[in-house]
Length: 108
Image 1 (cartoon, one colour):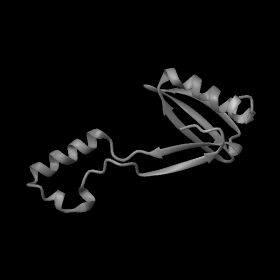
Image 2: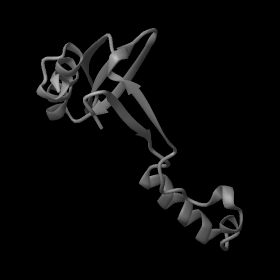
Image 3: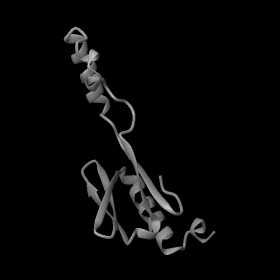
Image 4: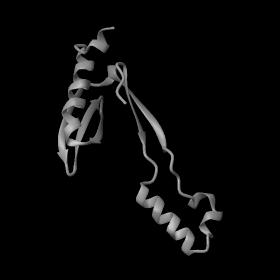
């Protein structure tokens, strides 16, 4: 999510395919793995992270297979977000406008 003062994102848990495979494995092993909490499928987010818009130095995008990687540079860190091709240009422009202060939300 992009806010006027920050960018927030979450690291996803296991993919749906991994969750389905774990459930199938649990059924085939007579539900033994369901008794162990560490082996249970996790459908929630692993954690949330935040980057202050003041820390963003530049933003760029590059095609990355089936998606486009929008790279946000903040200090010595580069954070890439894989987004659909159609949304990449809009997201890049929004972040750039918020950093430069030309977006209406950044003025208020």
